[in-house]
Image (cartoon, rainbow, N blue to C red; front, side, top):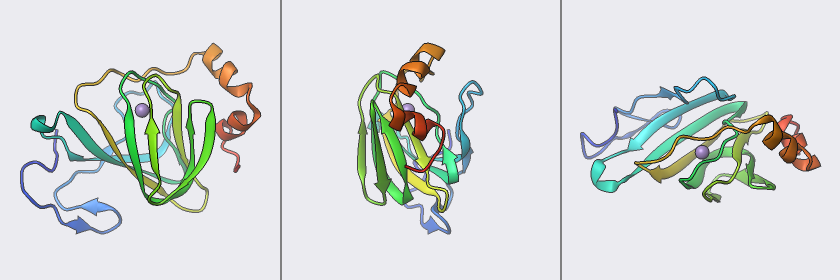
Length: 155
Ligand code: MN
């Protein structure tokens, strides 16, 4: 995969891009529901055993609702939005840190007015995300705040 390992410095470019770093589709997996989101792999050297990616969703965009064995360490770098982690919906904004533990449902949503961009650190070797079953969704939606979040209503 194209990443920032082949030269020492990749200078910042316009709009949260970096020179020589490709902007990629969010996922190859078409099963997942997501909207208006791009991915850049900033660091993926095998020596690191981890990857640092930058994801950005346009205003009103969202990442897929998923869980997996690997965890995420997230630094919000741009804009604001809300995230669901486990059974909590929280507003997030630039420079907030979000920890997503193993096997915890999570999703990020940009506000309607501005994009939401974040750095996300993960293990290089990691399991595939699981998507919620109808039963999982029903359980999540039993919480009114989570239900409103999933309907993309401002909270
Ligand atoms: Mn994830």
